[in-house]
Image (cartoon, rainbow, N blue to C red; front, side, top):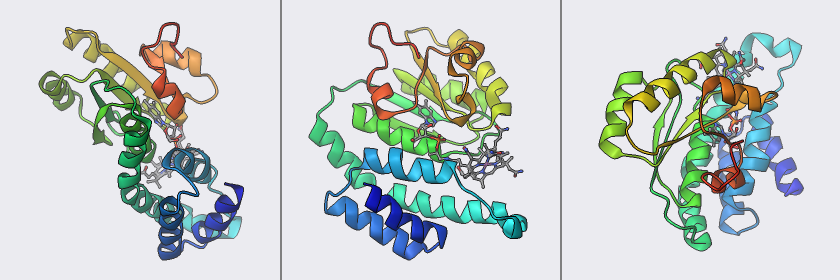
Amino acid sequence: MDKILQEFKVYFDEENKEKAVTYIISKLESKEIDVITLYSRILTPLLNNIQCDLEDRKICIWKEHVKTGIVRTIVECAYPYVIEKRNQLKNANKGIAAVLCPPEEYHDLGARMAADFFTISGYDTVFVGSNTPYRDFYNAVHAIKPSVVAISVSNYFHLVAAKRMVEELKKAVGYDLKIVVGGYAFVGDEENKLKQVGADYYARTYEDILNIGKEGVSL
Ligand code: B12
């Protein structure tokens, strides 16, 4: 795994999309890595630790866009391996999971990877994506009746919008819907932020998602 991380990091830092995507797909195909390890131990830490040199500062955001573009291509190309993993693990079917970000939250790659974790865990997953408007979403929930709504928040300032979403969703829904939150905005003070937002669970990893609904698990 470390060797794959080191080799991939070279292409990622050079922003060489062709080599980065081809390299990772070849590793998935040869089964040297699986999607869960790829997302958790390679793509997530590389994105969350993006550094920008001082000389480079004016183009830092540009570089973040290019790098997230490379990762997004990899994640979309990895979908057949997500399905393969789900079929291999044979987790019990757990109903529908809707995965989204609150209004104004445009960081959606964490949500996108989490959506694949839900799929592997046995959910029929609907990836709603970034910047989800409140009302549209409540209407959709009534129509699709998910067993889980997963809200991803990256920017700390969007925790307020997430809280509103949780409150309104709980009022609007008349069945046992589980609301799970996650994302970088919770990191550091997960328990308190979970309480503030009022959701049922905080989750980060594939294993956390597998544990949703099990007795005694609320963080
Ligand atoms: C890439 C990135 C961007 C990209 C986003 C591309 C995209 N479409 O997603 C771009 C360049 C567009 C961007 C823009 C901005 N960004 Co930005 N961005 C980042 C960066 C570097 C990485 C985020 C990321 O994709 N991580 C990778 C994902 C996979 O990791 P993850 O979210 O942790 O998700 C994993 C788990 O947590 C879990 N998970 C995630 N969500 C959920 C939900 C549930 C329910 C579950 C179960 C699991 C789960 O699954 C994932 C798989 O492992 C972070 C730095 C950081 N440390 O987070 C800053 C960061 C999030 N950005 C930040 C800022 C400020 C901005 C901008 C405001 C910058 C600007 N001035 O324009 C804009 C705002 C955009 C907006 N309105 O939302 C700040 C937020 C600070 C804060 N206040 O909290 C950060 C923290 C950078 C920093 N240190 O200052 N950004």
